[in-house]
Length: 248
Ligand code: NAI
Image 1 (cartoon, rainbow, N blue to C red):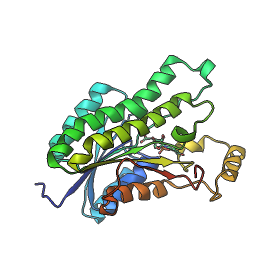
Image 2 (cartoon, helix red, strand yellow):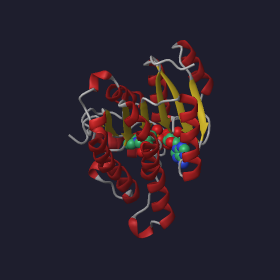
Image 3 (tube, rainbow, N blue to C red):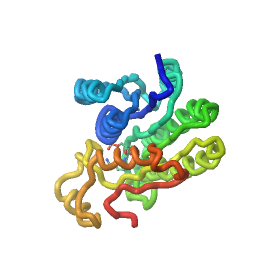
Image 4 (cartoon, rainbow, N blue to C red):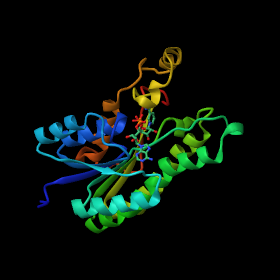
């Protein structure tokens, strides 16, 4: 039986990397968490035991967010299970890099679908419930690439910049109903997305970061936890860069 003291969060792409760190942090902050991904989380047993330790629960919903029907069905299932959602984190994201002259339609469309259109679909599905409750928080995970661009990533940059414009507009639409919408824009974070970079590229990158190091997924999760918390109750429509100072 749900009680009003419970807090419910949905995280897309919570199976690894930044999303998994967000799931862990939210469990520690007293949320029951539902995460959507195609495969179950890495070290799913650890997640379950963290949930138990904090007397919360973590539930995996198998979903390919690029598939509109699968995503809409997942939203329905989560709403049936949760009854309400306090926090939605649109974290899932992919890259399909290519210089524009070589970029295939499929790479453009797929990145826009996963990184941007899926956020539109989850926000549309859940904002109705948040508005009715006059309570809720949405956090979209963009990227510094959405702020400053990157060669070879026109599709990714367009999706991440799109997410910022989308979030600011949504923040304006929902503010009068006390629903806050913010963006976290990570810089270079140690995950499978950046693992593919070789050591020379990593060293070169590190030299461009004022704090002199690549960030951790937990540092991004801390920013999400802050924006979701009452400490950020007067903050909406903002982009918080977690990038070691890269875009200051
Ligand atoms: P990752 O590749 O380690 O994890 C991505 C997550 O999204 C996984 O859980 C994966 O299962 C899920 N996902 C991908 N496509 C999906 C689909 N079609 N359906 C369901 N789930 C899907 O990536 P990472 O590094 O943790 O990135 C998380 C977010 O942070 C992404 O939006 C990424 O663009 C953003 N970001 C990451 C940065 C980095 O340096 N790692 C820098 C800036 C932004």
